[in-house]
Image (cartoon, rainbow, N blue to C red; front, side, top):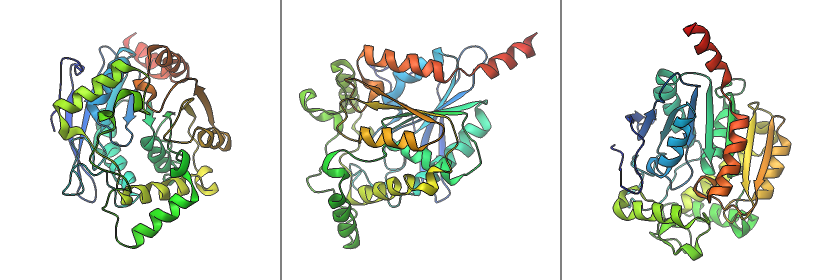
Length: 324
């Protein structure tokens, strides 16, 4: 459950590590940081597939500097949370609704007792889709005042987003092959590919930092997804984009999509934002999938829009009143 600190990727001071247990008995690793001075609220940092807390140390530090309490966790099957298969390298999921179980544990056991309101969410890729699905499932229960979604997994890019890929996943799943890697998949971490071949970021330094961290702590890594993970992801995306689900999402949302996206579908993100009554979408030119791991100029664009969208002024005003 510890956090892994390295010279090239130092942990922000003051981390509180929390062990969570979901309603179906899965153990998760979570962490919480508090800023100096009165907090402006709390940010729930929701990771994407194959990610882990340590990867976001830089972002956590930037959020702390902005005066927010920051809470995050590793999803089941990745990071140092409980893995679901004997082969730890397989990125697996049993059912799409398991995301809801993990979020429920995080909200009940970390946000509710330890994080001041207002609550905001900063969610990436798979995590953004899972969070939106959770919000829709709790129709009318406004947990977060505002949500920022980074390259949300509304649909997949290229062949992976096709009807043929969906039919293949359903067929393999029906044959009981859910625990196998997707065709061509193997035990390889996304950051163990050559930089020139990567689809995640155009920033060599941040790519090298993540690759170095996984080299020192391979237990954090997850390889390619299983058929079961892909099958569950298709179910999640289908449910999320249904008209019934869309009508249940009321929270103000700002999506960021990547202009050089090769994993999820940027057009699908833009279309989904238009369908929501309270959402907007900004496409960052030149960015790849992991916007927070991108070059400084792209990250600056992101933070400027983030700061305009999530001010958290209400709690600052209340704190000033209490002190006077």
